[in-house]
Image (cartoon, rainbow, N blue to C red; front, side, top):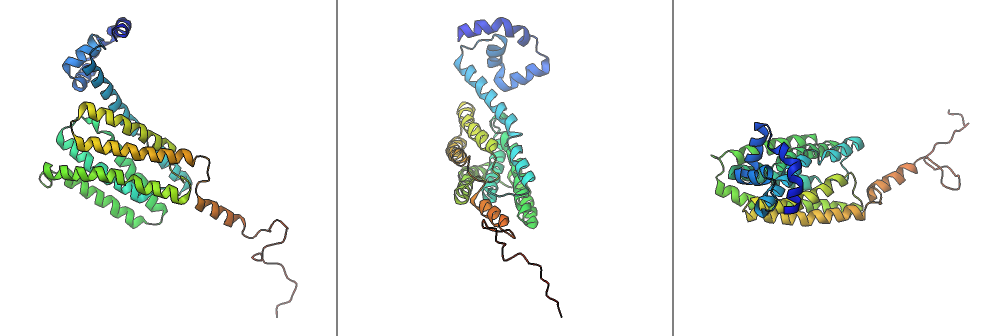
Length: 289
């Protein structure tokens, strides 16, 4: 690492020594004064503790940045198809509830935002996706109830006078279980339909990478087993979803859509022999009396 530091130092120090005060203050708040001086001022990569912290912060901020768009492809697929086929509303409901609890727990515990910030962004996208799934399923009333209930839950969890930290820690333990359970309906839906439907590969594989990165950042910055075990279990089920995505990559959208397409294509047309279907009305010369 010393050789790498020596190579980078003459290139980076003219920049890091002249950072604008707001930028410098941001780095100091992220890394702490000691690690900021070691990593950015001195360009010294030979200090393992500061190097691990720097990698963890970079991963955390990268995850937050990616989470801002991670489910946009999923939203676009639903909007373009005007269908929520292949997407489990129950899965999104459980995940959103889990993220809401985790967001409140992490914020009230004072954890660094870089260790949990993506939960807020993903939860917001989950709400949009869940609402669209219900809407295209003809359940607009259920969508309104879902949004109202989620808003009430968020207010309750963030209000310190309604739910104390001890109770919230119990809820966080349950949220970890919910987060794992949220993947099970989606895994089941894919297996049952024999295809991934409108599920976005971009979202699935980003989830897999993000959950793996979160294990590292949690080990480095958050001394909380409840959070860690949740990410480990989530990574395991994200790996199952990614495996399904690969397995069904070249399959039809789902067995249901294949059947519908076959039925639709057979309406009112002749079979291979050229004989017209009985559902087609033939012209007649008989006079109606």
